[in-house]
Amino acid sequence: MTPQELKNSILQLAIQGKLVEQRKEEGTGEELYQQIQKEKAKLIKEGKIKKEKPLPEITEDEIPFDIPESWKWVRLGDCSSYSQTKKKVSPSSITPDLWLLDLEDIEKDTGKIINYRKAGEKKIAGDRVCFDRGQLLYSKLRPYLKKVLLASSNGICTPELVPFSMYGNISHEYMVHVLKSPHIDYTINSVTYGVKMPRVGTDTMVNLLIPIPPQAEQKRIVEKIEEFLSYIDCYEEAWNKLEDFNERFPTDMQKSLLQYAIQGKLVEQRDEEGTGEELYQQIQKEKEKLIKEGKIKKEKPLPEITEDEVPFDIPENWKWIKLGNIVSILGGKRIPAGRKLTSEDTGHKYIRVSDMKNGTVLTDNLMYVPKDIYPSISRYTINKEDVYITVAGTIGTVGTIPKELDGANLTENADRLVFTTLDKEWLVKCLQSSIIQSQIVDATTKVGQPKLAIKRIREMYIPLPPLAEQRRIVAKLEEILLLCEKLK
Figure 1 (cartoon, rainbow, N blue to C red):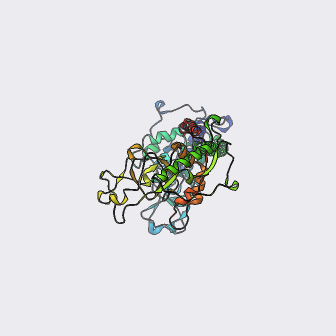
Figure 2: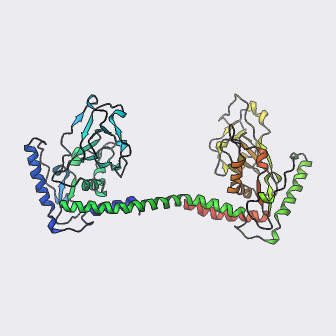
Figure 3: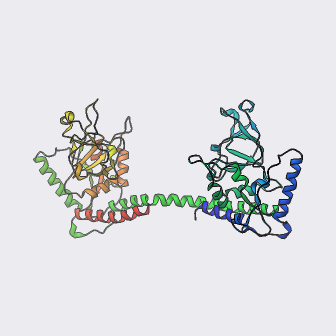
């Protein structure tokens, strides 16, 4: 049960007379009602309130639920000044030190004041309604927000707030809880008018049925509600922490799984699958062959990884290597200055960083290179066998290329990783892990526009398992990550 559901349950029990016991010595709601009528008659006689048209008797069909015998159903208009004329004040008569209350100053559901302002702090246009300390303030605009409170001092407010008092010493605190209760909230909001800015009419509020217990019981109800609400505040704090944990859990779990994967803890090692050293030597031979054939350029050798650089232990059959020793890293190309991409299909697709999301490239909003400038950037493409990494703007996003984008032109804000004898999905998962992402953060230049240089990418270190184990790790990750997605 959510904290709000718990609050609603308590308020509903309160207005049904089920929160505290009834005591004969405290009298009845009928006696309180008669006291209210005498008080109203006296106020009318003294000219302090206007005599109003009698409200209709309450019928059996109107009563929504049973209440204790000592309670009484009454209409809000019979026991309050809700429909009485409100005193208004024009902008020219407002003094700067007067409390000015607008709807945005009130927190929804709780009725707490979140912004206290004096009239002199804001330009006021139009009349404002006056209210006195201790009066009830009820928002007739969007009443589902439950902006109900007791005025802590005299002030002026927007006409969308209705200030009113209860007669016969009915507890104003009790009435705040009544007006926030689920039944009353539902009743009011089921008859509001206006689609975008729903309001509740005065006639609805005046005829609203209110359960009235004896005055002393009202006080005990308020005390019990306040007692429970203090516990609910603690419960809400714990609930919010749990909700935050639950919200973060799938993502945190994914990060933990990736970390386990690159530490060699996700699947078992098998002797028959060889070693990372053997795979590394095979890759070097393949690179030498490609260099000899002129397919890739020979690069400056990278230094060996020292013991101090190794961040954690890996299985004995794995090997720590520099990324540049097993992949070639090639940059993209921007279109000439002063020219723009086009949405017209020229046959030359162009992949931007904004297209690179969720480990792939989105194709629903692709742009194209104009035909006349294509020759100047035609060499800067990316293939379906490659992995991309973003190096400017959003930095460190990695993913694979869909088949339909094979040979597309690549933005200068991303690089392509070209490789052989590596599992592509393993490489992506490895680059997405916290160990690589932290290196990316450290390697990104902080002066001017942040940028991740190819030289820095080559120097990043990653663990290299045997190829067969890479594939088993990917299969296990896909299986478990699917379960994580279902937790979101």
